[in-house]
Each structure stands twice: as structure tokens, then as C-alpha cells.
Amino acid sequence: MQSARRKILQKEDLVRMLTIWRFKEHRIVFTNGCFDILHRGHLEYLSEAASLGDVLIIGMNSDSSVRNLKGNNRPVQDEETRALALAMLPMVKAVVMFSEPTPEELIRLVKPDILVKGGDYREEEIAGAETVRQSGGQVVILPFIKGHSTSKIIDKLRG
Image 1 (cartoon, rainbow, N blue to C red):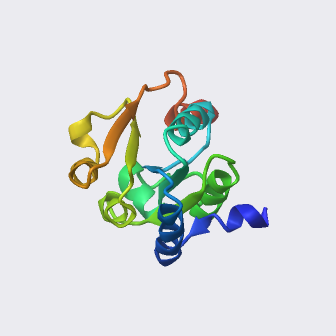
Image 2 (cartoon, rainbow, N blue to C red; image 1 turned 90 degrees about the vertical axis):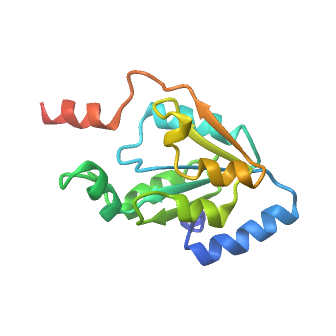
């Protein structure tokens, strides 16, 4: 668990790691989300995203950011728990929290080679897409995996 905790980075630490990864010519893949209740759809999505490069970085919404997006009953799990769950996945190299409404600022910091989002987004809706394209990167939209949704899981649990 200690090695997983080392993957949860502050922005300053991420900058240091990015320098190392870029020196090694690793392709940097970035995605983001709330990841409130990690489920099969998330796992398949993250595995596919990781396969597109060498280093998968996840920008994770802070608790306050999730509340602003999803309402006062969310997140179900606190940011520390969500970050640790993501960091424990072998395909994830770094988890960085953000509190802003979108990950645009974090994407500008990371300058990923590949920005990945799920098929429930259109390219023009993806925060940071233009920034990534302008710096020579690419935007990849992975197919949406139907039948797997945090909101549906929460609704089912609430009965």
C-alpha cells in the first residue's frame, strides 16, 4: 500500500516525475474523472487508456469539485479513498487531484502526448483538447462501456 501512496502526487511532485518520464522518452497519457465508485467500466477504460502510451496519469476531481459537479450527496467515497483505489491499479503511474471546475490547468501542466476521454463525450466538450492538439498531442475518445455507471450503482444501492 505504501508504494501505491507514492503514486498520489501533488502538482510540484508531478512536474519532477514528468521531467524524468520525458527524459526517458515515455509517451504520457492523461485522463481525468471523479472515479467515485470504481467499477468494471472504469477498469476497462483505464486499461485501454494505459495501452496507448507508457505512463498513465489520472487527474481526479477533489471532493469539493465532485460536489459542484454531481450534487451534495456526492462523492460517496472521500478523495483520499478514491485516489488510493486508483493508485493501487498497476496501469496507473500517477494520480493528481484538482479542485477547479475542469482539468484544463492540470492538462496545461502535464502537456500529455495523448488526452483520453470516454465515448460519452464529444471532442468539442473535452477540457484541454485544444491545448493538447496545439502542442502536437492527440485526443482519443474510447468507446463508452454500456451498463457500467457509478450513478446506476448508487441508485441501485439506494433501492
